[in-house]
Image (tube, rainbow, N blue to C red):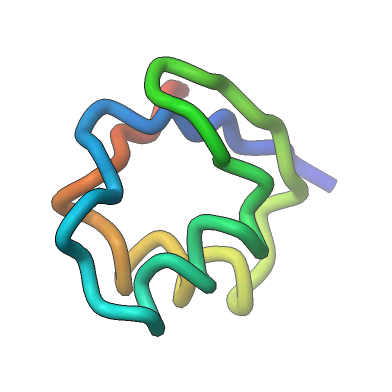
Length: 58
């Protein structure tokens, strides 16, 4: 299955709790950290939730 790389580009400070939990679930705890996940609908949903804090690297 295809993988997707996600990079946190903005700070989580001031974000609502649900967005902070989404970042934790994705494994993003610090700025400029890159994680790799399988491209599944649940991961896409988490990315959509915090799309303003992350960028997707193809």
